[in-house]
Image 1 (cartoon, rainbow, N blue to C red):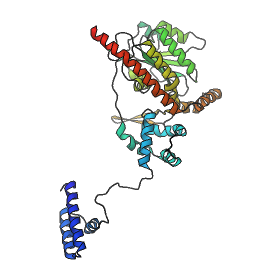
Image 2: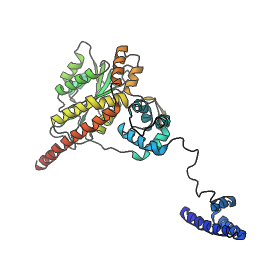
Image 3: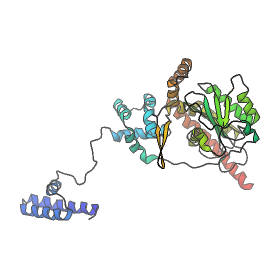
Image 4: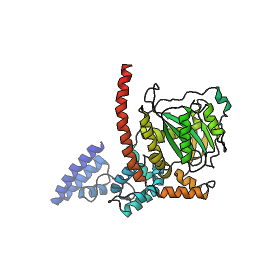
Length: 394
């Protein structure tokens, strides 16, 4: 007998049992119980409770009663999930203490805030399980550098991951489905010790554009740039860029990854997705002024939001167990928190970071970000229509 059929059968038998009980017919009640026991294989005492209305059919939710007001909290968790750029449950829990002091909602009471901070990662994961989204792939735009790359040492081991300033660099092409013609691209640089990440939009991969972007990033960094590791693309492997890094009063160590080995730059490759693709997607950005708009978004809104308020997880160790690799991660932290804990950061630099943090509000950053992105995408659509028409004619 199926569950649905059993439920219907017990409903009918309950009505018969109640009728016999009203008529005080004990033999009729006993006969109904005997029949139900034979059909359902249920215990007699359980059936008496079920037919008398003292017990509900089915088990319902097993375990202890929930200690949270889940019906109310689900709404706030969902809202915060999208405001925090859809993090995992561990990162989201680590971000709550940074975001909730700025969360001003009339219905969000101190008790709900306390419950949200107390909520475990597994409870958060169950709430978030139904709202995951998947991404798509874009086109690679890297052209291999010339024989000049032989003058640049390969970085076969990791940088010093304890001292801030050693950064991986890479570019992301906003070309849509064609590498032909002019389009914008984003330079991503991420610090190995703290995961502090900066992005700059360019409209060309010429050495002058790349040097200008790196200079802008250096001015924003809360620590000096000590080393740069790039892939073998021509935007990095050229005389002018090498000269810019190495011929200065405090030279920057410049290395490159092995050709066709993306795992050599796993950290910045990950940030290419979380910091660039998740923000602007895969469509073409065909105009210079759009790249300038994107650059302002990176500098004023997107990078501060990530570096100060969105935690990330760093791997502590990897151990191969048979055919599988077991990874152990540290507790999720923001780049800002890692820099405050870093012994190589000066007290002046830490105080400057704390001052900047006190002036920021993640909800204001997110609100301004949505407005700026809407303006960017509206302008982008206008020129994409023109670009696609011209492509058809060509």
